[in-house]
Length: 236
Image (cartoon, rainbow, N blue to C red; front, side, top):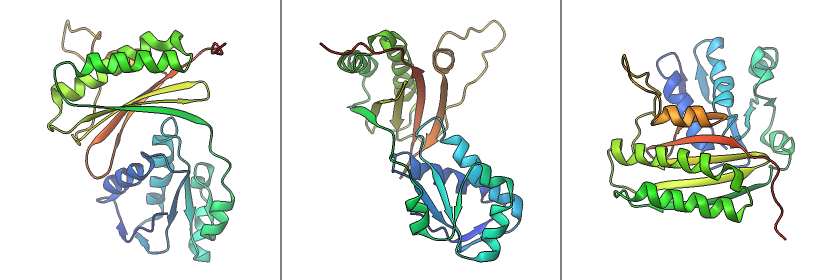
């Protein structure tokens, strides 16, 4: 549960949005935001909650729930377009009671020391997990995505902290997520004249259903990509 204080205004909008996203990265059952102590300078700024909900929709897929005990403010939110994206409740108990059982997930992580062979170790990890989870059909794409994300962290990161690779299987989607301590956002940049799009985030964007970059606590980021898996071969 999050109870923000202070003022939400155009100058604080982006940091407020990023901070909410950070609370979702560790994949709690939900992030419940109690709004009564937050001053909002204009009604359109409430759109930050819809924006955050869309940012985390593909991954980590954590629902955002709003709790507003003040009747007037709650009525304003419930009559706005925000409710199409984020539900509004009168109490924390009501918000908790509304939650469905979380989807089943399988996950595995590997912490990598940032050395020259870290991408190779990430590929071996992905190969092993895809075999173990009987999703070998997506192994090649997942290995390429992990390689590009880990190499990007190793080559461009500004930290000697470990790089964490996380694989997560939820329904028919495999997520490859790579976290590091560098807070700079991963951005897909267009190559210069004559440049090619066969490396880095261009590979990730081409191979994945969706990809993104999320800030994490206390500092750093997670770059993730989702890959659809076909029918899985059940172990004999």
